[in-house]
Amino acid sequence: ISSIFWLKLKLEDRMERLFKALLLILYGIPLIFILNSLFINDNMYKFMLSSVIVLFIYSILVIKYGGKRVMTFISSLSFIAILLDLLLNGLITRFSVFSHDPAIGARYFGIGNELMGVFLATTTLCTGMLYKKYYNRIIPILFLGISVILVAHPRFGANVGGTIAILSATIYFILEMVEKRLSFKYGIISILIVLVAIGIMGYVDIRLNPSPTHLGSSLILLRERGSIIIKNIVHRKLSMNLALLRTSIWSKVLLISIFSQVAAVCRRRDSINGLLDGRMGKGILSSIVGCIIGFLFNDSGVMLAAIAMNLLTIFILFQTLDAEGAHGQ
Image (cartoon, rainbow, N blue to C red):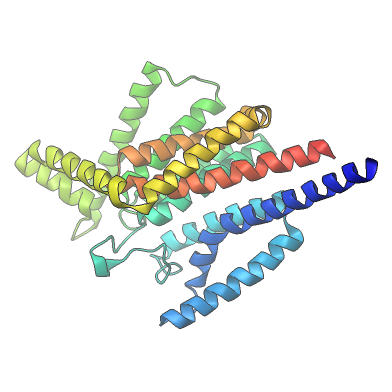
């Protein structure tokens, strides 16, 4: 009987290690696609070959060195890569599948919603990691502040919906950090902060750019034609989101991520509560808030929310398994 019990434990341990390795591989896919664009992939065969080679090398490293440090490293490197990409006007991701695609009429400047989803998740999670490690309030605020400015600035990110999402996540993180509940009062203050930030971004856009981005152009039209422009913008964004919800694969990805998190809470309630109650939990919860706001206030918010929630779900599952494994040992 003891031999059978020992064999069962061994099999469970191997299955857990395999599942954790698969989670790490999935978590690193966006980073692989970002860094893969640095290679000269001028045709599909080169792209497939370089992707397979990078994924193979990455998988070997994950299987050999898999653990919390790898998760932290992937999150940090993803954040740094996108941050540098914003500063370098898309130099790193210009050939990435996460970049914009002017050939189909999509965004061709700044940060697109695909990359914004990755950036939202990695920024908030890295912020939570920093707060957990150093327990310093200034570092996370600076970290998030720089991210908001780069996403909002018309010369860098120029993404209004992304700005609203990451700024909302930042405000929620600060409220959690100072132990304030999101009441009606703080909700109104948060809305005012977002509106002021958008107004400043639009003013900078009009002043700096000879040909303003869509935000600057919208504000100019609003001044010339009145509130009908706001109605048109809201209608367009709602129509786009509804169309994507019906036809896009991202709506299915988002639902799977939500159901996975609900299932994890039901099956591992104590572990999830322990994760969310700690300082790391503030980063996770702020990421969820950013996903919700990004979904509601973006013309392709389902894409942004799905990618961010997918990464967040993988992170939660890995952290839960890792904590339970350490507790079991």
